[in-house]
Length: 297
Image (tube, one colour):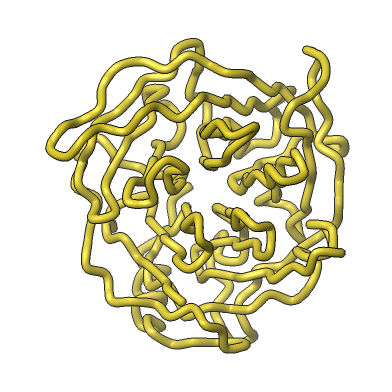
């Protein structure tokens, strides 16, 4: 989706203001930008499980079914085409390890009109990363595919993350009011469409007094830390952290009031990713703004 320039102006004016509870995450001044011209409409981001100095990105609907690799400095490190996959509306990306093997999960879950009978999640084994000075190219085969439906009807969903410790995929709807949290098994037992079960509701609404511009209070990306202690959701407005204790379900964790981090200052932020040690958050935008925004502990 597009947002008007007014949103960009207001968010830019708000740059650097911290609202809500204070946290250990500090927004740094952006030093790097995405250098690949092929990453034109980034809708998903994941930090590599093989090497935290690499990141993967995907483009939004209608683009080629391609995973784009970049360095933490934004340098173009190549791309891999996913065989057997179609980019109907790719909206998020997650990296995780399963039985010691690194994987990437691609969420073809966008549904602006809420009329898709099924959405699809593609899982591929993360390829071996290129050596210094080299770039990646070639194709990837699907490790497994998850076709699914939401239990309460079609949903637009741009926020998908994996908690591999418990074998679950967590999804958050975009256009419902409030956003709804769902759960899927990471490895469904049969080939029939899986059903995303409703866990609860969440909120990423800005504080009172902020103009409610189109889509400003709706989730556009998410991630879960490798140790399961935190979830994060990004919106066009800001970045929202959801601490979780070991006894809580993700429905309970995302149901609590979030910690609002310093504003990202981007007009159309669509992607957020934890580093594997949970000490860094990276945010990128879907259109126009190619800066890489980082938060560090």
